Length: 236
Image (cartoon, rainbow, N blue to C red; front, side):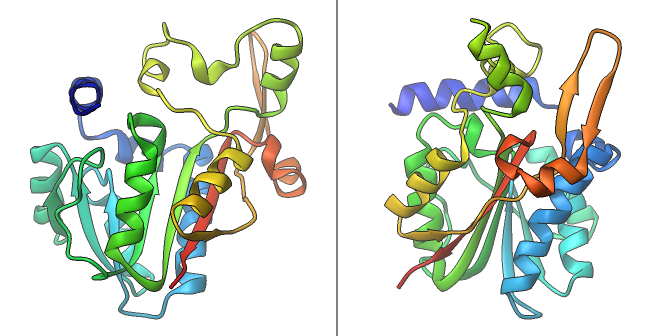
């Protein structure tokens, strides 16, 4: 298992240059996903709470956490991303989310894992480690691509593979653990969290020429949306 995770980590380091987070923030689709995640954190945590941002990139999300009164710690496997976060004034730790986290037990108030869990070989270990490093009552907020959004449900009925499991896509091939909301909630409960209802950003429908997005539909039916945003509160 460790060897498989090492290969997954190496593939992610090769596949991501470290500026993906900044690119996400330029895209309304990902900005809304992230806003939902930040809302979940700030709705639960007091000002000054310490939040680890896993897969932080150059600290851009850490800056947003700071603006909301939280104390961010940028965590990334890419050394240059950690250096960029430090240059931006965000505390940084280099770590591999697929391994044991070099963080003291019960030392964090919150963990943000945005677009991370689908990349790790052993998501149960990641959830267990997040549970360990959080204090009782702390919160983990996950965002991940939805395996079963509206259009992919129709694709599957027609005998076509859901988009998130395309092994030949330029970056989706790195998504080795796709999730639906029930599966994610099951994993959170098994790790000792109380999962929240899901939120989502957009219900997306793609044609050969256009892409249609609906925020209203994602609010009404979040399990049909493109991204899942789910919180888990650490039980005592």
